[in-house]
Image (tube, rainbow, N blue to C red; front, side):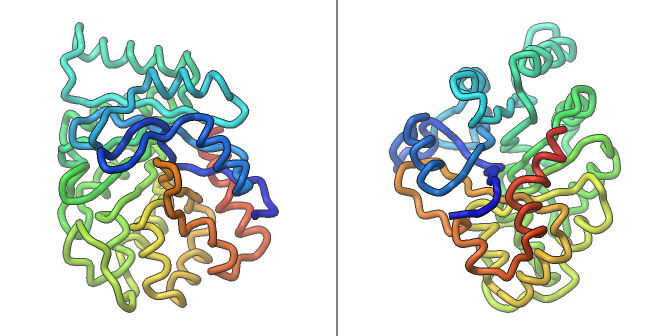
Length: 278
């Protein structure tokens, strides 16, 4: 489908939703081959609020080791876990994951404010081990206030960490009239939204366009979506949030939906993620 090398920055292998079937590694590989996707980031889900089932970092690392040329593993850790030896224990755990091949941290989807002191323990470790961090922001996970002051404070406090924003709470703020952290707003986008502001102001702010929230944000006002992609071609990552067999993935129509130059397409589809992972 795509003429460029394609990296999907947001996927899950395993059982995520109780109402959806489990996705196996072989099914993921088949789906990737069918759609011309070269590599995918495999994300863990280590928090009780994250999904119907846990996807552990151990399972992600073990799967990635079977197909290292296709799977890019991220690691995860809930900051509320009772880990022996406290702070040192958290550091030991992340070091072990990095030594086993973890290239980033996420999906962070904990039921805590994004600027909670316990969450900041994780940001410090991401800075220490040079791990980009992909997080889910809504009204239940990695929460914030409307306007995203907590997230902005974290961008300022941890400039060494590349934060990859995702989910309804982030993408609602593509419009300046955002008034909640949930749902899928429709209608024209009011310019001056916080997504534009934060992506422009902070070198360490990125976003992936995965899931219904990312696609809705780009397509609710197609003219604005086109200009948004052009403004932030260096900060956006192609992603799907593919997590069960047969899932509808509108992001696969990206090049047909928007008028992307060859350079823009290459950045969105692969090189932006490549740059973050280096």
